[in-house]
Image: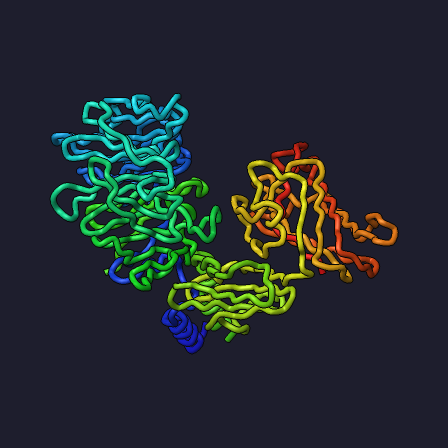
Amino acid sequence: MQRRNFIKNTSLGMAALMVKPSFPFSQDTILGQGNKRYRIDTHWSQADVAKYPVNDCHEMIQDKRGRILLLTNETHNNVLIYDKKGKILDSWGHEYPGAHGLTLFDENGAEVLFICDNKRHQVIKTTIDGRVLMVLDYPKETGQYTKADEYIPTETAITPKGDIYVADGYGKDFIMHYDASGKLINYFGGRGTEEKHLLNAHGVCLDFRNGGEPVLIVTSRQQNAFKRYNLAGEFINTIALPGAWVCRPVIKGDYLYSAVLQSNSRQWQHSGFVTILDKNYKVVSNLGGSEPTYANNKLDEMYQTIKCFSYPHDVCIDDEENLYIAQWNSDKVYPYKLIPVV
Amino acid sequence: MKKAFLPILTILFFYNCCAQNAFQLAPPMLKYHSVFFKTSEMVSMQFAQPGTKIFFTLNGKEPTQNDSYYTKPILIQKAFTTLKTKVFGNGFLPSETLAVKFIKDGLKIKSVQTTEPNEKFPGNGPQTLFDNKGGVANNQSKDFMGYQTDSVTINVLLEKKQKITSVLLDFLCDYGSWVFLPQSIRVYYFDDIKNEFRFLAEKEIGADSSQQGSTTVFEKLNANKKVLSNRIKILLKPLSSIPAWHPGKGQHGWMFIDEIKIY
């Protein structure tokens, strides 16, 4: 090659490199609005599918050692344990065919898990490494159930003293309240026409953000809403989320995060996104969804805008404010990681 | 000099490959009362994603970025109008096309009598078929009457005796829920002079295996002659045996109907 041509080629190459690419990378996409914006990593999981298969990825939590636990209804390994970089550290569990809800609770310094299994119709309390500590069967003592099949628990929330709230989100939509030993104290919710009633009570959590006695936030997914109750099960109010099939509420810091399984306007068409609410239950950001707007204090209908998620099912927020998104019925995809944009 | 293009080509190729990684936009959200309208229908569109625009056509063609983009609600007046919409935006693959067919009201219908629908899908009674509501693919909607019988008869009484040229029926097509179009439609009109129902039009329909998802489909049957009448009888045969390519092979298909128009 002549020197003249070499220089020309090199400079052309350099010029081409300096041109801002007109074609984007998906990882350049910024999701969300305001100060809750994220960059997405769809290849976070480094799990070898032959060794660590997943089916539906239902829920995730982070333990105090910083590890990320994923619950899947794949009985080859119901629980996958990752580090924050997506490397598999451990796995356990073969006996949870309907593994759905995963809640972490610090019991006097020892972390325990509560698993809702909607095929076994049970709630199972285990150690962090999977040893079974307690099993809660269907709550026949309520008088609302004649057989186990009618009870399809989806989520638990545990109070500081160990009381257990169970949401029967795919069954009769009651919220059961047990003491720490598993004795039924109360139940509330259920289906009906009043505002206190629920339809697809898919999630439950405790909200400590306002100080004092915590408040229960319960999902009423088919009504596109969260509903608030006090610990005695008395209804407080509804947080309407028009258009959003919200899964469980997850609170970290001042914010409430929730996977939205799908947009009401495009049902069963992989139309999910993730929503984030502030302390006043005002939607501040939708990741992969429409920019939230309010008219006369009323939230406008929300919907998916970017098809980055199919059917997101849970959000886990780690100690560095990264998000992990587990998805249901999405071609057995591993969770995605979302990194905050500062 | 030829070699000078190589690095550029390589880089263009590289970026083109990466374009496959970009996310696709979702289709826009459309708001309207119903696809069935009396004189006109106002359609508004939403897509709250900065940097994107909704392009649309009303001539049946695929929307491109050379077409009009949405700025304010559009008024549909033409009897059969297909609105096609698509979202474009920098950094994303364009959305799939969302198409909606709007259908104008026909001759005034006084009443409708039907074969009793399945108890789970009664709609809102016979009124369902001429209430100008529906056209939205949702099998839980009260706008549909559902059947799983061998035949369905629908008698339509018009307000007055009029010239009839065609009959339109709107169905749900949702193979995932075992909802198929009827396998045949036969339409009769009442002949006052002969005092009997006489043949007007017919159509045989096959279950097309390429149909995806859930959608509404209208079938318009044109009369092969000019008739004057105030009574129409429609005989529908829901799919008696689901074809082999479907998981419900050999079983009876469902038929969901939400509207009838007589022109």
